Image (tube, rainbow, N blue to C red; front, side, top):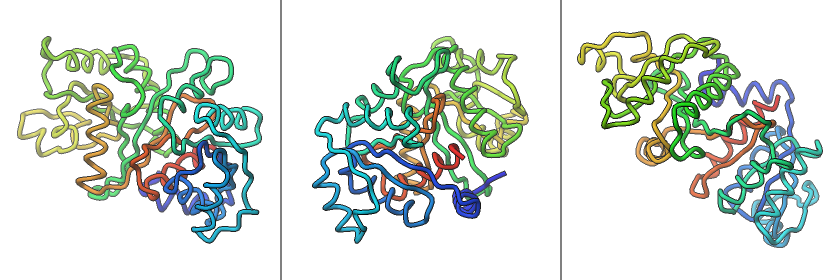
Length: 299
């Protein structure tokens, strides 16, 4: 089981895994720097789509040989995203990546029924992989960026996507906490009702325990749970945290990055191939970790 991003990087390097990234609207210095870092570690090649002149300027600034890259000119961000997806579908690239563009444009290309990367019956969801230094392990938070206000059925599908991701990381029997503002069902707080129904679902494969609703403190801290008179296998041992909705998940993960300065990598789940969709405010290090996870998933 992997516990740190450095362990995943070592695995990729030692196994000579190299994947081709199609970076849409590549004139994004942070995204391009992250791709360059992956290329310098010999774990990635790149096809760069967008304003070729600006892309080459950034590469030159980074002291990169522009002959090491393939370029596709494009002046429209939606078309750039479509090209990246098409390259993956045609097996000319392994991973599409969002550069300097609106998330909605990139998502539109990914979700296209005829030319996108979602098979029938799948739900697209996002997961944030957190390096939990205090306990020397990973924790997965989902969904923080795709499904705005998922219902119970959606949350079950999101949970299934996240379980599969945990298995890829070597977490054979993940413990799952379904979060809300408190640990008791309150009909006035819909997320507590939803959490209970998700936790009662019987057909999750390959899990340890699941509990909900759980407040964040008792999901993370065994001591806090005991103090509140709650004792179950998930409290203090959660591998997966299912958030109530996109706003709460987005605020939670950004707080971890900007206040706690923890290492977090975002990944899309439910797609036919790994997809890199980072926030425009993410640093080059954040974007590199997301590249690392996509390469690992594509192995």
